[in-house]
Amino acid sequence: MKTSIYFVTSLIAFTLLLFACGSKDQGKDQKAEESITSAREVSPKVVFDNDYVKVLKVTLAPAESLQAHEGEKRLIYSLSDYSIDWVERGKNEGTRSWKKGNVHFHEAGSHAARNIGESTAEWLVFVRKGTKLPDCPEQFLEKDVHVVTPEVSRQLFDNDHFRMTEVNLPQGGSIPMHSGLNRVIYSLSGYQILYESDKEGKVERSFKPGDVHWHGACQHALENTGKTEARFLVVSYK
Image (cartoon, rainbow, N blue to C red; front, side):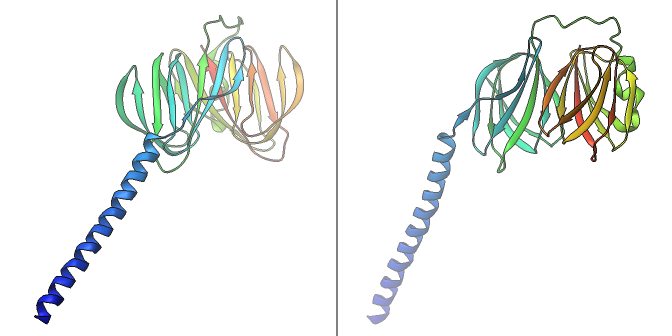
């Protein structure tokens, strides 16, 4: 009799334990589901805008979404490692993963994204507007910064619309006079340079990480006059 009572009591205790564990797991699943379904939608931040181009920065915390919107032809530069669920023209394209420093191109069209990773996803979007770019008789990509100083630069991307080059100019280093297209410069580090062009003459300039500025085409040169390496992206618009 005592054995039967002990068996029944143990069975009830075991059942209650299973129920408690199941409820706990179910609670976790429910919280995770609520976290996903209540993800906050965010919009890109405009970091540069003029008559010809626009540069945006997208920052998505885990589970945050980039709301569906129309986009022009654009070049993407990854500022972090991240994985996103990608929707393009209303079709779910599955998961896309990128590493910091990766570059890729998108055609125009509607799109949306959700950060499915565990860390913040950040990337830059370089867009060209429909306005005709300023003319210059000496727009020669054959003599751009990567051609004249390949030892301090590397070409990250090139197609019919954009060319992106990363420049790492050491302290005291210089880049001789060369040609280039209309372009946006994005500062990857803080630095100070002496800039010279056939339009502006010579001028000393300082930049902080994340600064963005515009240059028209034509001839230019620069020297790193600061105390640190100058690291920046050159995004040429064709």
